[in-house]
Image (cartoon, rainbow, N blue to C red; front, side, top):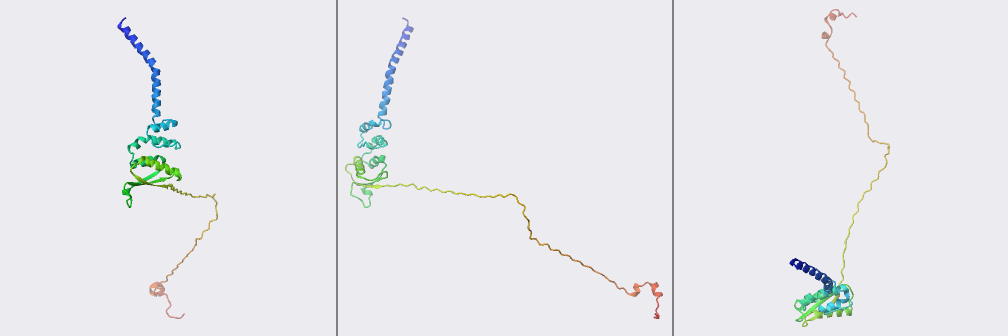
Length: 226
Protein backbone atom coordinates (compact mmCIF):
# COMPACT_ATOMS: atom_id res chain seq x y z
CA UNK A 1 0.00 0.00 0.00
CA UNK A 2 1.44 3.31 -1.06
CA UNK A 3 1.98 6.30 1.22
CA UNK A 4 -0.65 8.39 -0.59
CA UNK A 5 -3.29 5.70 0.02
CA UNK A 6 -2.51 5.70 3.78
CA UNK A 7 -2.86 9.46 3.96
CA UNK A 8 -6.16 9.29 2.14
CA UNK A 9 -7.56 6.70 4.55
CA UNK A 10 -6.35 8.73 7.55
CA UNK A 11 -8.20 11.82 6.37
CA UNK A 12 -11.31 9.76 5.80
CA UNK A 13 -11.07 8.31 9.31
CA UNK A 14 -10.76 11.82 10.78
CA UNK A 15 -13.88 12.92 8.96
CA UNK A 16 -15.81 9.96 10.41
CA UNK A 17 -14.62 10.78 13.93
CA UNK A 18 -15.63 14.43 13.59
CA UNK A 19 -19.05 13.46 12.24
CA UNK A 20 -19.60 11.15 15.22
CA UNK A 21 -18.52 13.79 17.73
CA UNK A 22 -20.60 16.63 16.24
CA UNK A 23 -23.93 15.69 17.94
CA UNK A 24 -22.14 15.27 21.26
CA UNK A 25 -20.57 18.71 21.01
CA UNK A 26 -23.93 20.25 20.11
CA UNK A 27 -25.49 18.77 23.23
CA UNK A 28 -22.59 20.00 25.37
CA UNK A 29 -22.78 23.48 23.86
CA UNK A 30 -26.52 23.66 24.55
CA UNK A 31 -25.97 22.46 28.11
CA UNK A 32 -23.21 25.02 28.65
CA UNK A 33 -25.46 27.82 27.35
CA UNK A 34 -28.26 26.64 29.62
CA UNK A 35 -25.97 26.53 32.66
CA UNK A 36 -24.66 30.01 31.91
CA UNK A 37 -28.22 31.35 31.78
CA UNK A 38 -29.01 29.74 35.14
CA UNK A 39 -26.16 31.59 36.82
CA UNK A 40 -27.11 35.04 35.52
CA UNK A 41 -29.64 37.12 37.54
CA UNK A 42 -31.12 38.61 34.37
CA UNK A 43 -31.67 35.29 32.53
CA UNK A 44 -32.32 32.81 35.33
CA UNK A 45 -35.95 31.49 35.33
CA UNK A 46 -38.00 33.12 38.03
CA UNK A 47 -38.76 29.76 39.67
CA UNK A 48 -35.03 29.19 40.26
CA UNK A 49 -34.25 32.66 41.61
CA UNK A 50 -34.39 31.54 45.30
CA UNK A 51 -31.70 28.93 44.61
CA UNK A 52 -29.53 31.45 42.81
CA UNK A 53 -29.97 33.89 45.71
CA UNK A 54 -28.91 31.16 48.16
CA UNK A 55 -25.80 30.40 46.07
CA UNK A 56 -24.87 34.12 46.10
CA UNK A 57 -25.27 34.32 49.92
CA UNK A 58 -28.25 36.69 49.86
CA UNK A 59 -29.18 37.05 53.54
CA UNK A 60 -32.76 38.32 53.06
CA UNK A 61 -35.39 36.94 50.73
CA UNK A 62 -39.13 37.37 50.43
CA UNK A 63 -41.25 35.63 47.82
CA UNK A 64 -43.67 38.57 47.91
CA UNK A 65 -41.09 40.90 46.42
CA UNK A 66 -41.61 41.92 42.79
CA UNK A 67 -39.44 40.11 40.26
CA UNK A 68 -37.25 43.17 39.38
CA UNK A 69 -36.35 43.63 43.06
CA UNK A 70 -35.40 39.96 43.41
CA UNK A 71 -33.08 40.10 40.40
CA UNK A 72 -31.51 43.39 41.52
CA UNK A 73 -30.76 42.08 45.01
CA UNK A 74 -29.06 38.99 43.55
CA UNK A 75 -27.08 41.10 41.07
CA UNK A 76 -25.69 43.40 43.76
CA UNK A 77 -24.92 40.65 46.27
CA UNK A 78 -21.19 40.54 45.45
CA UNK A 79 -20.81 44.30 45.79
CA UNK A 80 -22.86 44.21 48.98
CA UNK A 81 -20.55 41.69 50.64
CA UNK A 82 -17.50 43.74 49.66
CA UNK A 83 -18.78 46.71 51.68
CA UNK A 84 -20.66 44.85 54.40
CA UNK A 85 -20.79 46.82 57.66
CA UNK A 86 -20.34 50.24 56.05
CA UNK A 87 -22.72 53.13 55.49
CA UNK A 88 -22.74 52.28 51.77
CA UNK A 89 -23.90 48.73 52.49
CA UNK A 90 -26.94 49.96 54.44
CA UNK A 91 -27.99 52.49 51.80
CA UNK A 92 -27.36 50.03 48.96
CA UNK A 93 -29.42 47.32 50.65
CA UNK A 94 -32.46 49.61 50.88
CA UNK A 95 -32.01 51.13 47.39
CA UNK A 96 -33.85 48.37 45.42
CA UNK A 97 -37.05 49.19 47.33
CA UNK A 98 -36.93 52.86 46.35
CA UNK A 99 -36.31 54.20 49.85
CA UNK A 100 -34.47 57.48 50.43
CA UNK A 101 -32.01 56.70 53.23
CA UNK A 102 -29.95 59.19 55.21
CA UNK A 103 -27.41 58.13 57.83
CA UNK A 104 -25.98 60.46 60.47
CA UNK A 105 -23.22 59.14 62.68
CA UNK A 106 -22.85 60.22 66.29
CA UNK A 107 -20.08 62.77 65.63
CA UNK A 108 -22.15 64.39 62.82
CA UNK A 109 -25.15 65.04 65.05
CA UNK A 110 -25.82 68.40 66.71
CA UNK A 111 -25.41 68.00 69.61
CA UNK A 112 -23.23 64.89 69.34
CA UNK A 113 -24.95 61.62 70.11
CA UNK A 114 -23.70 58.67 72.12
CA UNK A 115 -20.36 57.38 70.88
CA UNK A 116 -20.64 54.57 68.33
CA UNK A 117 -24.27 55.16 67.43
CA UNK A 118 -25.92 56.23 64.19
CA UNK A 119 -29.28 57.74 63.29
CA UNK A 120 -31.00 56.38 60.18
CA UNK A 121 -33.85 58.26 58.49
CA UNK A 122 -35.75 56.31 55.85
CA UNK A 123 -38.29 58.09 53.64
CA UNK A 124 -40.95 55.91 52.02
CA UNK A 125 -42.82 57.23 48.99
CA UNK A 126 -44.56 54.28 47.32
CA UNK A 127 -46.63 52.86 50.20
CA UNK A 128 -47.94 53.60 53.66
CA UNK A 129 -46.19 52.93 56.94
CA UNK A 130 -47.09 49.79 58.85
CA UNK A 131 -45.50 47.25 61.20
CA UNK A 132 -44.43 44.87 58.41
CA UNK A 133 -42.60 47.65 56.59
CA UNK A 134 -40.84 48.69 59.80
CA UNK A 135 -39.71 45.11 60.46
CA UNK A 136 -38.44 44.69 56.90
CA UNK A 137 -36.36 47.87 57.06
CA UNK A 138 -35.12 47.07 60.57
CA UNK A 139 -33.99 43.56 59.55
CA UNK A 140 -32.31 44.85 56.38
CA UNK A 141 -30.30 47.40 58.36
CA UNK A 142 -29.40 44.87 61.04
CA UNK A 143 -28.12 42.40 58.41
CA UNK A 144 -25.82 44.96 56.75
CA UNK A 145 -24.51 47.13 59.61
CA UNK A 146 -21.61 46.45 61.91
CA UNK A 147 -22.78 44.37 64.84
CA UNK A 148 -21.15 46.73 67.32
CA UNK A 149 -23.19 49.74 66.17
CA UNK A 150 -26.48 50.74 67.78
CA UNK A 151 -28.87 52.75 65.66
CA UNK A 152 -32.03 54.82 65.94
CA UNK A 153 -34.49 54.30 63.11
CA UNK A 154 -37.08 56.84 62.02
CA UNK A 155 -39.52 56.41 59.14
CA UNK A 156 -41.27 59.16 57.23
CA UNK A 157 -43.48 59.52 54.19
CA UNK A 158 -41.97 61.31 51.22
CA UNK A 159 -44.26 62.99 48.75
CA UNK A 160 -42.94 64.23 45.44
CA UNK A 161 -44.78 66.43 43.00
CA UNK A 162 -43.99 67.81 39.60
CA UNK A 163 -44.80 71.41 38.85
CA UNK A 164 -45.71 71.92 35.25
CA UNK A 165 -46.10 75.35 33.75
CA UNK A 166 -47.62 76.08 30.39
CA UNK A 167 -48.43 79.25 28.55
CA UNK A 168 -50.07 80.02 25.25
CA UNK A 169 -50.42 83.18 23.24
CA UNK A 170 -53.05 83.70 20.57
CA UNK A 171 -53.00 86.62 18.15
CA UNK A 172 -55.33 87.23 15.28
CA UNK A 173 -56.80 89.96 13.14
CA UNK A 174 -60.16 90.18 11.41
CA UNK A 175 -60.46 91.97 8.06
CA UNK A 176 -63.86 92.69 6.50
CA UNK A 177 -63.95 93.41 2.76
CA UNK A 178 -67.11 95.04 1.41
CA UNK A 179 -68.04 95.34 -2.29
CA UNK A 180 -67.39 98.66 -3.99
CA UNK A 181 -70.19 101.21 -3.56
CA UNK A 182 -70.11 104.70 -5.19
CA UNK A 183 -71.55 106.98 -2.56
CA UNK A 184 -72.20 110.74 -2.74
CA UNK A 185 -69.08 112.78 -2.26
CA UNK A 186 -69.58 115.77 -0.02
CA UNK A 187 -66.98 118.47 0.03
CA UNK A 188 -66.86 121.35 2.47
CA UNK A 189 -64.49 123.44 0.41
CA UNK A 190 -65.22 127.22 0.24
CA UNK A 191 -65.02 129.17 -3.04
CA UNK A 192 -64.13 132.83 -2.80
CA UNK A 193 -64.10 135.22 -5.81
CA UNK A 194 -62.20 138.47 -5.70
CA UNK A 195 -62.26 141.13 -8.46
CA UNK A 196 -60.54 144.48 -8.65
CA UNK A 197 -60.71 147.28 -11.24
CA UNK A 198 -58.58 150.40 -11.41
CA UNK A 199 -59.02 153.29 -13.87
CA UNK A 200 -56.85 156.39 -14.19
CA UNK A 201 -57.40 159.58 -16.25
CA UNK A 202 -54.76 162.24 -16.80
CA UNK A 203 -55.54 165.88 -17.88
CA UNK A 204 -52.80 168.24 -19.01
CA UNK A 205 -53.47 172.10 -18.98
CA UNK A 206 -51.01 174.04 -20.97
CA UNK A 207 -50.65 177.90 -21.24
CA UNK A 208 -52.49 179.65 -24.13
CA UNK A 209 -49.42 180.84 -25.93
CA UNK A 210 -48.08 177.48 -26.07
CA UNK A 211 -51.42 175.86 -26.71
CA UNK A 212 -52.84 177.94 -29.67
CA UNK A 213 -50.97 178.26 -32.91
CA UNK A 214 -49.73 181.72 -34.05
CA UNK A 215 -52.08 181.91 -37.02
CA UNK A 216 -55.08 181.71 -34.82
CA UNK A 217 -53.96 184.52 -32.50
CA UNK A 218 -53.47 186.89 -35.41
CA UNK A 219 -57.12 186.68 -36.49
CA UNK A 220 -58.61 186.83 -33.03
CA UNK A 221 -60.90 189.85 -32.09
CA UNK A 222 -59.30 191.66 -29.24
CA UNK A 223 -61.70 194.63 -29.12
CA UNK A 224 -64.26 193.07 -27.03
CA UNK A 225 -67.23 194.09 -29.27
CA UNK A 226 -68.81 190.77 -29.16
